[in-house]
Length: 148
Image 1 (cartoon, one colour):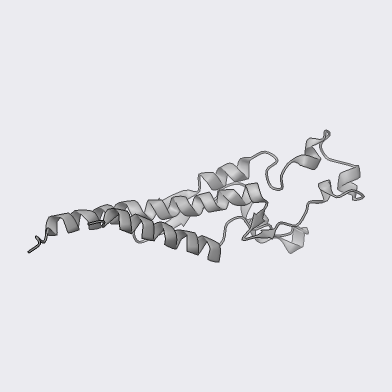
Image 2 (tube, rainbow, N blue to C red):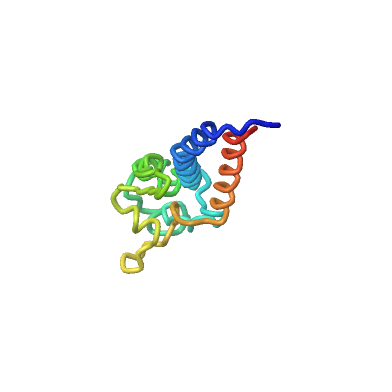
């Protein structure tokens, strides 16, 4: 006959309740940071910027001199936005996980702004790929904590 250890079950539940939200938040944050490396979201490439398209005025008459204007990744000129995404976890509790970027213009870049002729280049939003990654992370975490 096996022993039922109620104290261990309570300890595992408390541990999971405090640690799992942070595990999920970190998974989401890492997923969003990867969009800057891939220059795409969920496999959909961001629209190319005019500064890298030969024949456009931005290509011929750049705001900044030097070759870097044509080789710098999209949305990474200063790195402020990417750093904002990599530090975006504001709350990670059992009830609520909040990721927020406080970089100027982040909302307009993520959602686009037709009034300002700015195309959307999403870097933080819901995603089926992210959902699947989070599910896998939860299963792995629960298996580790509740391993008998």
